[in-house]
Length: 279
Image 1 (cartoon, rainbow, N blue to C red):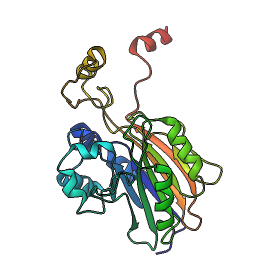
Image 2: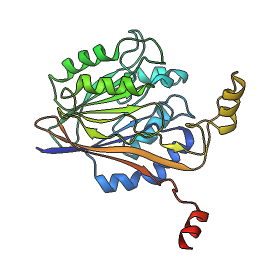
Image 3: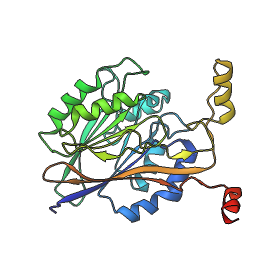
Image 4: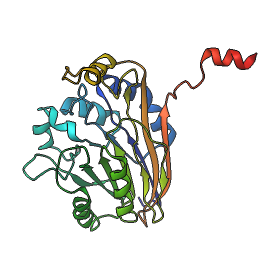
């Protein structure tokens, strides 16, 4: 079936059991609202905060995801490694050195259409591992994918805002959308760049906001205050889903609409504040 526009959902950093609970409770709302043709989710923290294995991936696929991207924490879970070697539906950052298992990009067919979509997973280097250049890695992947489709989505898993924005300007007009992940805090800068590439610096975390970006608050405080290692423990409670919706023109490969969402929204007015306003 020919389509003029494809609709895509990207769900940000699904973190541990609370992230999976948020998917169960809130994800169907956005599937119904947007009726996407294709769904991507970052799942590098899906298995108890570190990596993603086959059981968790299958749960997400059965919930409506088509492909999962990851990041640096994919390597923290040993179950992830053999799984990456067997599947093309879970990607890892392509700019890790050769010899690591898994794929960094792939071209997928969108069901019930004649449209194909390329998905690239990249990782930044600023304040992170000194891996291969994400800019030149992107060039190589785009050269390969563009033979098959002009619809290309990038998950740029990156610490530094400047590196994300720099890649966006470098690739503006060459890819459809660049979605930033990793910092777990949703940014409010979603936009379409001058040459037609949709962009957001960070799509945010799907998971427990009674936490420090997913980590138990008391553990995070000890790490900061004492400057020594403490056991990683995932938090729970106050679950939210963070994501972005975009539409892409199938002929041009350009992004024509981009819209972020965060649900449930944070409470922005205290009860005391409301009472004072009434007085």
